[in-house]
Amino acid sequence: MSMSDRIVTRERWTEARKALLAREKAFTRERDALSAARRELPMVKLEKQYVFEEPTGKRSLAELFDGKRQLVIYHFMFHPTWEAGCKACSYVADHFTGALVHLAARGTAFAAVSRAPLPKIEAFRKRMGWTFRWLSSFESDFNFDFGVSFRPEDVAAKATPYNYKRQAFPQLEGPGLSVFLRDGEDMLHTYSTYGRGLDPVMNTYNILDLTPLGRQEDDLPYPMAWIRHHDSYAPVEP
Image (cartoon, rainbow, N blue to C red; front, side, top):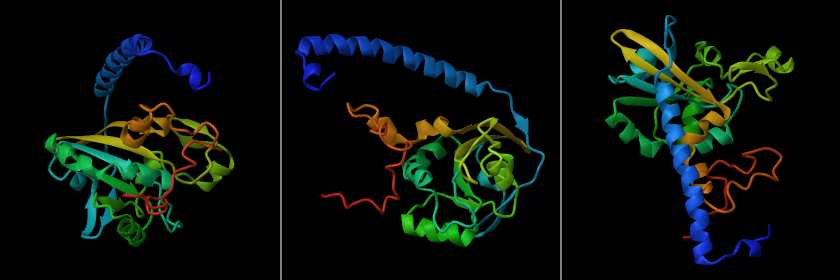
């Protein structure tokens, strides 16, 4: 349908908008039900010890809770051999800072974790101007255990363990997000999501989804092919 064929009277637009509103309300109710089911997932008690590094020293997973009950970790794609973090993960990370104070108000700590060594993380963080907590898991199995770093032989065999199945995956690192709950001295893994499951934390996408042109990715070689590090776009005119 051409753009001109979609131009109608205000009355016809309102009729179509009301029909879509009914679908949106049904989707919202289903999303609420899905969120409730997510909160009811069983949990896994963590027995393994993980050590991370940040500029002020070594930290355990328990210390990342920062005295709060909940912890959200974004698995930022940054392989030890790379000189910069993943562009898509950087796009995701551009949405973090504004949420931190609100998460803390609900007893939830937040951190990003990458397998790159700390000096590379710090250099890239400085370049991007980010202030959220970002640690290196270079000396631990954390990334492998939580399904976001892969062995070269698995990638070569197209049997990479990502998003709860063995599949072809093009890189040694993948994006993801994991959630943990503290219960006394116990740390519980409650949830992890990967791939399109990360859409809710990409608010630029959520805004674009409200527009008539949407994400504008259908003709690209792959979704997110348009994304750049935020300092690599053409300057935005004031």
